[in-house]
Length: 496
Image 1: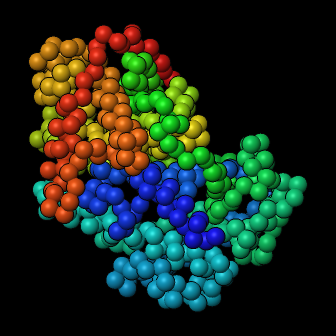
Image 2 (image 1 turned 120 degrees about the horizontal axis):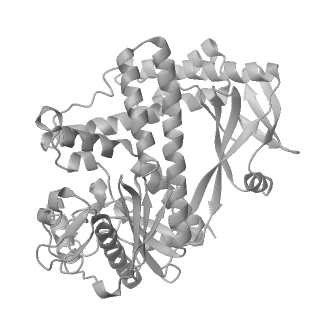
Image 3 (image 1 turned 180 degrees about the vertical axis):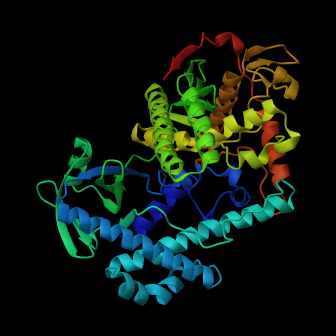
């Protein structure tokens, strides 16, 4: 029985391109982050080999004054323990091994901070994950400096990482558990406390119906002096197949228009950021003045403004992603792979750049495109759709009608696209969305033919093939794609 389960799981992994290690169908592509099928680390939580979607249920905890103090004391002790383990890891060769950290700090954590046993095991694990992330960034920066992509040295490990947020992690069955009548039992330094909670009705129903539950985070809203328990829920969804994903759509992201979508039938939609971007720019100017002032009150005000700006962008991304998914059910949605886009694109910075160029660099570095793409990814799975990443190379410079690609196709780098070969003219963002749509369609066709979903269709494969050669092979195949201009209806504009 176990052998049959393993075979079924392996077939599902291979059918969707989830294979890893020596069983990976794309050994060369896995070495480059820009050829990954799915959406970076933020999106890996939305994709698992068994196609499970992870949601977060936000439970509002109703506490008495004594329970409030117990939770707050536990949070602060947990944060102090994290910083202690971080200093220990830094002093011992910037260690990232969670087993070694636990062996060296477990006894001290229990004795000094009175942390319960399971939480004392979670702390070294969290610190080890932080150091692994930092080491990854250091190695990536070293490779980029060697390749001449950047001259800046990453300084994340020049000193021990400091944990500022008091948010702590609870493990189900050890640190917290659910009771009847909308109550939850939570572990503190003084023992367990049983608290009533309220939450979104659908999330409460899922918890009561024995939905698989994972770890939780105890989060404190300082402005409202309110505790929330953020519980992760796992929902199983049907395995995607080419037969269930009958439509194809492409999404181009930007600043003037947060997202522009296009389908193979020519239907398109513009999701403008006209009402959102000016507010974000106002917060940026206000933050600059407060940072220049540098007083304690200015620092406190900066914290408030940061929260407002974060919520503003998060709300805008939620609205845009929901509208996109509602318009494209049962679809394969293509998204641009923007991993390391700042390092991969050549921009003039600093004193070499003009005032207009510096202003453009600031504008493109402010919006959270990764967050928008991650929201589209997990919402797509809930609506029987799926999001994949496709190459973003020259999507706004390549003509979808004749395939001609050059910088001159974007006069003055504006919003107008004019092909210098066939003189096809259209909105530049819509051109990008259509190119993404065609590349997504190519990936779906190969998926239906081979049974493996690859975002690099037609790439060369083998130990002697370089990244540049594989990229050139993909671009040659993309250049063969053609869009029929006479089938495109008028674009429908949508906004926030």
